[in-house]
Length: 210
Ligand code: AP5
Image (cartoon, rainbow, N blue to C red; front, side):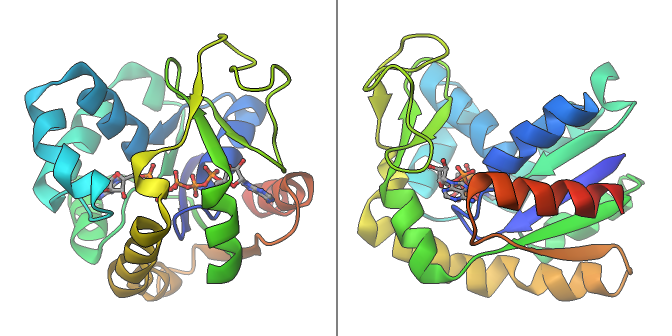
C-alpha cells in the first residue's frame, strides 16, 4: 500500500503515520524529519534548509523532490510506504507522478486552524531521537524527558505562535490545492482529525483499509 498523508501543519500527520507504520509494517517517510536531521547534522542541504524551516516557509521544491527520489529508491519502500509531508505543492505532486510512483490512497486529515494552534503550541519533541509528544494530549511517561530514549524534550523553533501563523498561511496557499489535484484521481479520502488521537487513528485506519 502506497499512501500519502495530507493536512495542515499540526493536523496529526506524523502521529498517524507512526500508527499506520506499526500496523502495516511499511516505512513512514517524513520530509520534515529528514530535513531536521540534515539540519542537526549540519549537512549542506541542512544548512540551506534552515532559514526556510525556521521561518515557517517551504524548502524549495527541487531540494525536497531530490530527497524523496533517493528515499523511495531504497529497498524498504518496495512493499509500500507512507508519505508524511510530501507532496506539499502541486509541482511536487507532478514530480511524483513523473517518477512513475503509484499512489493507492491519499488521506487528508482535516483540522480547523484554531485547533492547530493549540496542538502546535503544546507539542514537545525529543532533541535526541525526534519523538513527538503533547503536554496535554500525549504526555511523555517520563515528564520532561523522552519516554523512548531519555533525551530532553524541547519546543520546535517553528512552533512559535508567529511562525505557526505563517505555516498555516503557506499551507492554505500552496498545499490545500492538492485536495483538488488528488480529488480528480478518485484516490482522496478526507478524515475529520479534530477528535482525540485514538478516534482520529480509528478513522484514519478505516480510510486506509476502505
Ligand atoms: P513537517 O515536520 O512536515 O511539518 P508540518 O507539516 O508543519 O507538520 P508537523 O510535523 O508540524 O505536524 P503533524 O501534522 O505531523 O502533526 P503531529 O502529528 O506532530 O515539516 C517541517 C518543515 O520542513 C516545513 O515547515 C518545511 O519548511 C519543511 N518541509 C517538510 N516537507 C516539505 C516539503 N514537502 N516541501 C517543502 N518543505 C518541506 O501533531 C501535532 C501535535 O498535536 C503533537 O503534539 C501531537 O501529539 C498532537 N496531536 C496529534 N494528533 C492529535 C489529536 N488527534 N488530538 C490531540 N492532539 C493531537
